[in-house]
Length: 157
Image 1 (tube, rainbow, N blue to C red):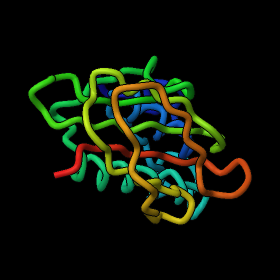
Image 2 (cartoon, rainbow, N blue to C red):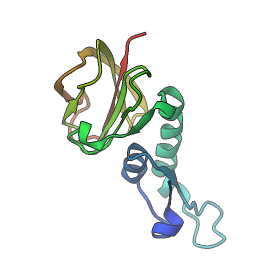
Image 3 (cartoon, rainbow, N blue to C red):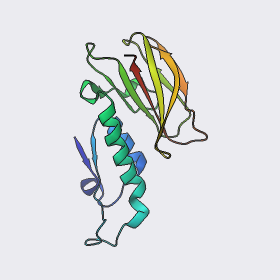
Image 4 (cartoon, one colour):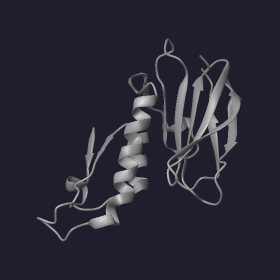
């Protein structure tokens, strides 16, 4: 599914829209007014959206995206991609729009999962202690305040 700002509302969008769209299994497309031909130049106003689009591309290349489907009920935040095929290594990526705590349902996953947090504002990953699979867990974002965050859990290789 292509989620195109031009057909949703024209010029617009936010980093949160990019992340929510991606974690719901869609492809975010941004109508960028970079050249000023249709509307006044967007300038740096749209840089956060462009940055989020680039970050989703980088993450999509790192995770086993082809084996994942939207499974929003697995994360209390409502934004989650997780392994859909039991033959594929366990993986789960969840988005927390306001950071804080998230409850993840890891039933059907086995073993110990590597856990990493991504700070979209800083564009950096942070390692965390491994998470035991097979149950419901509550994790706390390591980023201060209500900063958005992503958590990636994957089977140890």
